[in-house]
Length: 89
Image (cartoon, rainbow, N blue to C red; front, side, top):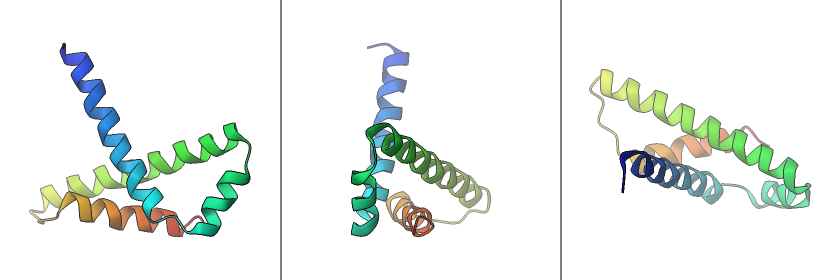
């Protein structure tokens, strides 16, 4: 396998982790609202949430590393997902 394929696989795995994190904290009423949307609209929302969670996650990881703050990535991702999803209501 070449480096590009490995990088793509790593990125896909990371984004799957991001998606699973925010979907796991998504309130049922918001999930129902998404399901009622047309497919393209729903996917646009998913991409925006993925991007918001991922951006905040990376920014927070960088900040924590620069300031020598110890965090567990999975716990941080759950916290960030909860924060982003809470703004959807």
